[in-house]
Image 1 (cartoon, rainbow, N blue to C red):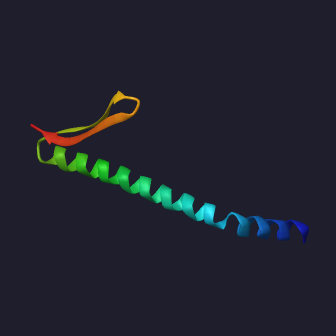
Image 2: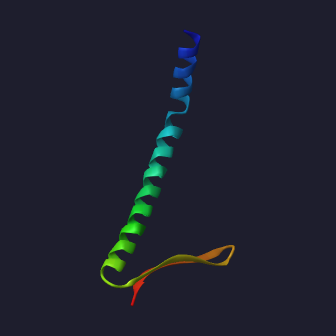
Image 3: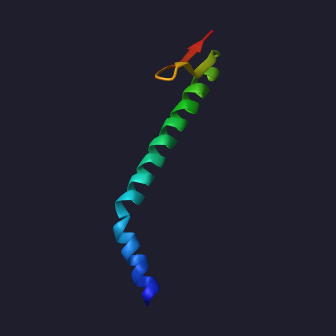
Length: 69
């Protein structure tokens, strides 16, 4: 019975951390699905998909996503 009570204590203590982890996993999955969906849309219309990230310096970066002929 000691292990079960310890498990319950840990579950109660870290419940918010576990919930936040699932939130961020879902956000990342939606971004990835959106990226590949837009790539499919571009290529199905006969365009070339251009998607990437340019790192100019450690503090700034530019994201380029689009369709080109």
